[in-house]
Amino acid sequence: MGWWQLNADTLARSRFVISPLAETFACLKLLHAGEGAHPGEQKWLRAHLPAYRAWLAAEPVTAQLVRAGLGREWIADFLTPAPREGEAFAREVARVRSVAPAAARAHLRTSLAGPLPAGLDRDDLPERAAVLLERVWEETVRPYWGRRRRVLEADVVGRTAQVSRGGWVSALDSLRPGRTRWLGENRLQINLHEYPPREISGAEMLFVPVTPQRHGWVAWEDGERYAVVYPCAGVLADDAGRTVPASLGALLGAARAAVLVLLDSPLSTSHVTAVTGQGLGSVGRHLKVLREAGLVERRRAGRSVLYTRTAAGDVLVEAGQGGRHPAGLASGHDDY
Image (cartoon, rainbow, N blue to C red; front, side):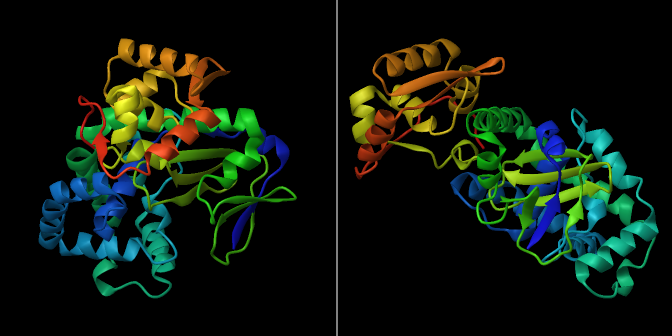
């Protein structure tokens, strides 16, 4: 397994950030795989995969670059620069474009675990990679970025609250279960590959959510910045697959039941509003009723007030999921 050595101060200073380029690269990986993890991703692929494949068919060098860069065990490092907090997509992709051609070729040899194909022995690889990422961003991510950003923000709020409640160990173990976990003795497991450990104490440590559910990776600028990219909470990402059991909807009303189903992750009122598409006033009223009924509780995490289901709320949702006829979420939410 691969792991990083970091001291307590480095972990204490680490934080969650959002990266448009990380989201774009995760979507590139999803397009490359061609298989969605849930109905929302499948719908997105139906909308964008044909055009993506047609474009690559007309750009054989870029197609070869994608196949080489997305290796089985290693991604070419120049494709995934470590995110920087608050950096816009244009600034992020400019860092890909500025990579030295020789470095890009070296990274591809590492991802291939072998020699570079003759077709990729050229100097325009960083430019081609940047153009590819810009195309994926403009055509398949940017049209949905408003909702995706809100979903990612909701994940960050929930993870930050988890750190406040249970400490960093519980938060790290839940990022990518089975892959990312705290090993003790200042060691963070980052994947299952047998790579030499890295000492990162004193560097900047970032955790970066993306919405595609099967795609995560690590990135770094040696000695300065290290990042773990992980899939955000599935209940947030799967807009098309989230359903409300008919029996629960009949008991509480479909819109109120939708809020209760969503709250297995801690969320603020604004994030519930963003994810469900319901009005802010309606969500506030639903939360008030659910809280008075003992189905939801609230707590403060920094400047945010977060709501999550109580044990009673969990029992009610789980009992309702035994029914056969789920009812859709309240209308009005954006498409994935």
